[in-house]
Image (cartoon, rainbow, N blue to C red; front, side, top):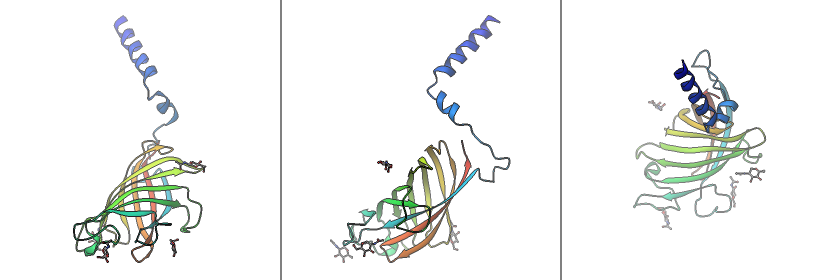
Length: 192
Ligand SMILES: *[C@@H]1O[C@H](CO)[C@@H](O)[C@H](O)[C@H]1NC(C)=O
Ligand SMILES: *[C@@H]1O[C@H](CO)[C@@H](O)[C@H](O)[C@H]1NC(C)=O
Ligand SMILES: *[C@@H]1O[C@H](CO)[C@@H](O)[C@H](O)[C@H]1NC(C)=O
Ligand SMILES: *[C@@H]1O[C@H](CO)[C@@H](O)[C@H](O)[C@H]1NC(C)=O
């Protein structure tokens, strides 16, 4: 009996002193009745202006690594294979490049197949608006010739604490090798 009480007091003490205590109070995990129905959906666009030797003023991305047969000014031939691009792209709610950004898409993509355009993406949406603060983290293969591609949402912070889900990417527009706009349909299956 007294041992039970001691164990209980100890656990209670652990709970109180846990640094995650405030998170536990602030966030409660919402389980959907059907795990295949998202608990939150959102649509955003992001805009990538690749440096091409002439547009250093408005470029939002740059080739930082290229194969030995290419260079970091002009995107490589052979489906851009081997090019590593770092980006800091504005995120908007509509597809209008000039609308007010609500955050930045920040990370990299690397072209990883010689005979067809395909890339691997690793990036975060860093939100900075009155609606949303925090981040969502994305990773996955992007066979970018396909109309829609799914990548993983592997986590989040702030308003998106511990979020997980799927993002469906669609190329909404592109202009040569310099500009593309992606539409991102976010479906979270774990919300807190
Ligand atoms: C970037 O700037 C160049 C000229 O400096 C302009 O021609 C081009 O339209 C701009 N691109 C975008 C996407 O605003
Ligand atoms: C980079 O490669 C392109 C295409 O192969 C070439 O036209 C250009 O001169 C190269 N630039 C530099 C700085 O090496
Ligand atoms: C977020 O937005 C505020 C207000 O516009 C700005 O002062 C702040 O620097 C921004 N923070 C980041 C990380 O962009
Ligand atoms: C992309 O499209 C090709 C051809 O339509 C298809 O075979 C492939 O499975 C698709 N890949 C993904 C990841 O959806």
